[in-house]
Image (cartoon, rainbow, N blue to C red; front, side):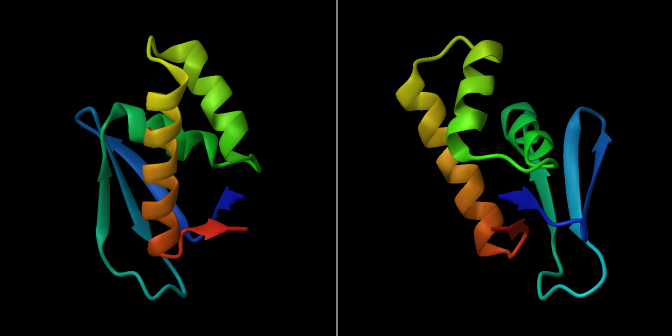
Length: 86
């Protein structure tokens, strides 16, 4: 999976903001905390949820189940707005 190129991100005052450009049915703005922003950044290249979990485990001091739940939640949110190529 990968973040669609029609979604752009920008860091503003420590918060990542994502908007859709071009042909998208989503017309809102997504704000991400630092953890979700890291997941979004990892999705800028083709990856899997398991690969994201592994990379997040190297960054954050949390157990695998907690990280996997967070990754799943962010991925599902992005999927629900049509932001992912799968």
